[in-house]
Length: 136
Image (cartoon, helix red, strand yellow):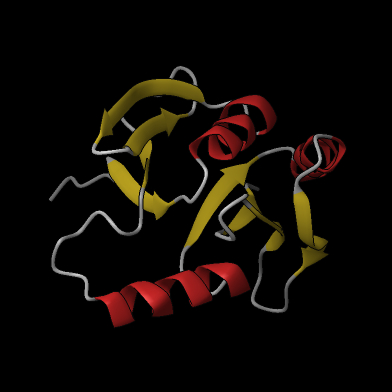
């Protein structure tokens, strides 16, 4: 079996703030920006890697989500406990410095973890946890 991750989904609450984070701070390219009913779905991804994307989606877009569930999702997003994505880089310190200088909310500075990786963590404007692993 030959599988890859093609697209992952993260919620957003402010499309312009999300664009500023993913495009301007992380350096991702915008692949698609679709609006419908006052909501926006924004597809971003690393430049030069068209096979990997993140779709930033409005968390309330699913018609099967109840109002109680929407409130729970909003509360979890505000606490930063709803969604996580892990990225990777060969230059963790340089990436950390660039993100911090760009104003990203630091959750954890570069740290050697007891389980064998070195990583750091940030939050995006919606509260999603962005972990970045160092590729060795």
